[in-house]
Amino acid sequence: MFCALAHGAVRIRDYEVEHVLEDIESLNRRAMRGELPITAISAHAYLSVADRYWIMASGASMGENYGPVVVSRRPGELADLVGRRVAIPGPWTTAALLARCYIGEFEPVVVPFDEIFDAVDDGRAEAGVVIHEGQLTWEARGYHLLSDFGVRWQEECGLPLPLGLDVVRKDLGRELATEVNRAMRDSIAWAYANEEEALDYALRFGRGLERELGRRFVKMYVSERTRDMGDAGEAALRRLFAMAAEAGAVEKAPDFTLIR
Image: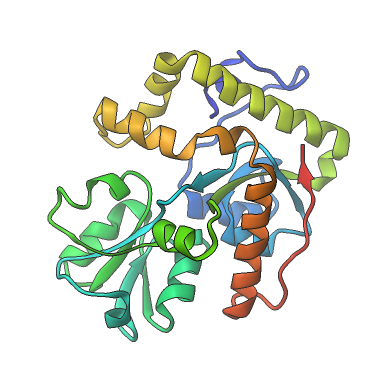
């Protein structure tokens, strides 16, 4: 998504763009402090920053019949995890919200997203909610699938599953925010037109992911809905926020207006 912006192939006026590389939970917390004018965050985290940030129609990562997976060293079902220790990649990740909604009461073991498997292997947790490239590698590691939240979401509502969002701080003003969204859309289009160069850039942060597996992962979460989430993406966000309110994760689902 960011390759063209980071390299200056797409510009936002005459601003310099600094690509800040941190794990998603760190970005969630920085957004809660209002530190970054433009940032990726979890859809779950938006519940806490809706007064400060607008959601951009471009830049969202949405699962289409796939999403975070719950895995364990032993076969079983989600119901087996009630009251058990489950590793999650941060309390404000969308994966953690979905676990709360679909598992119910469990004991969260919070670890960085790339340590979920370690937490299960060393006994800190009995299962883990896996995001990022682990969604493609859990089977090769000898794990058992307890649930794919994206599949369950699709079966229940027939909408894409909102996972990550790109947001822009409201104090930049509506005009500049609209330009930022347009630049993000153009950067994604540039990546599709220059796929190998963009993939080279992305794989620098892929933690050893093999190229073709990396290509597959990128195209799962940088799709046509990433260029613009459309009406289906907006409806999916409203459903997710309502579901969060029903689960007690937030008092009231926030209203929002997409920046296009």
